[in-house]
Image 1 (spheres, one colour):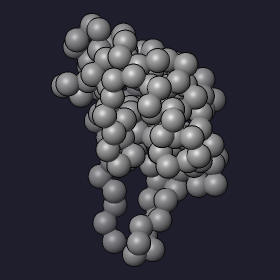
Image 2 (cartoon, helix red, strand yellow):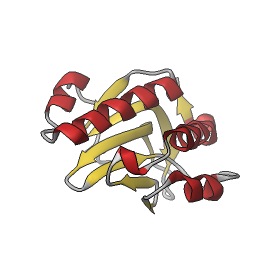
Image 3 (tube, rainbow, N blue to C red):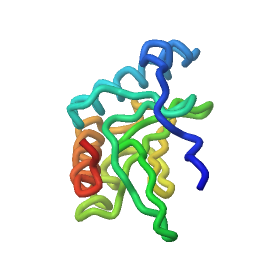
Image 4 (cartoon, one colour):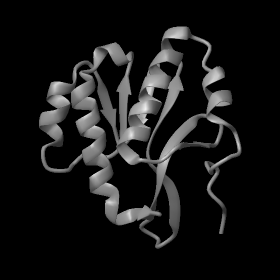
Length: 139
């Protein structure tokens, strides 16, 4: 059975953040990292080359194989921030409607800039995402 390509690395958060060359995006990453650490109570771990993850959850594929993934996390991308979290919990649609300018994908929230989002709503969304994944959380 093959190993997942995206796994925790020994890269420090400081090294990860210093790789974000755009100063505004780096500031957004620092703010999101602080928020995610506050929400999870866990320090960032760098997964692969581009994801800062907070906490770990274990999920199961349809074929029964299990894998670990960050409970929540983020990546700095060329066009903005990608936040990894879950939706579909009670009230998630209402929170997303109040969040501000964003796009969503399966398990992803895309923000061009943190200034586009209501930070109070974002914090609530992340807290509720963590709560929704609590049964799969690995401690």
